[in-house]
Length: 186
Figure 1 (cartoon, rainbow, N blue to C red):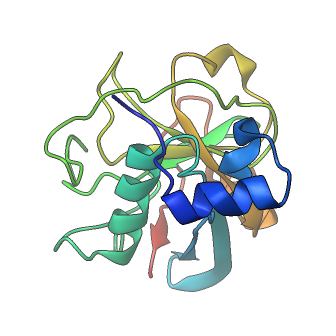
Figure 2 (figure 1 turned 180 degrees about the horizontal axis):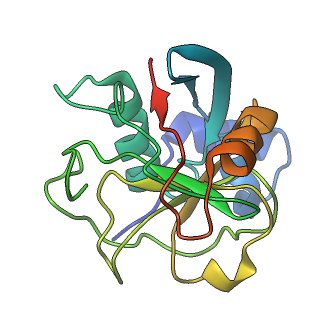
């Protein structure tokens, strides 16, 4: 069974405030992660991302742990290896080759497709088909509705979207191979 489990005290608090149980996800903390990005040793700035463990807890935890590197591997030092103008920037290849490693093993399942690619800054899992989530992710720089129900959305950029758009516009190519590599320095 998948889902969010609330303690007895949390349920009691929800009822005290008169909130319907269907809104309990609004009370779950949404963690934020950051990435300091560079290109050719030029600091581009910090991108702050808000995760949605209330909707996709396993996917959000995978990304959070890879951001911190607490499992002994993570995003620090990796690059955005696929960059397409007016579409997205893709990174997270922690294996520096195939990108098929998560904190849960090689792959993990698609939790759900409740969130959509409905705005610039949407954070989504990159995959090679159903239930093949690992470490790679992408940030859309525009609406990308054709990816709904194919890629799991699990967060969004809350600060630094102009940095992401700059990477896409200045360093991206139509084929996806970047002109210069943007690196996750920290």
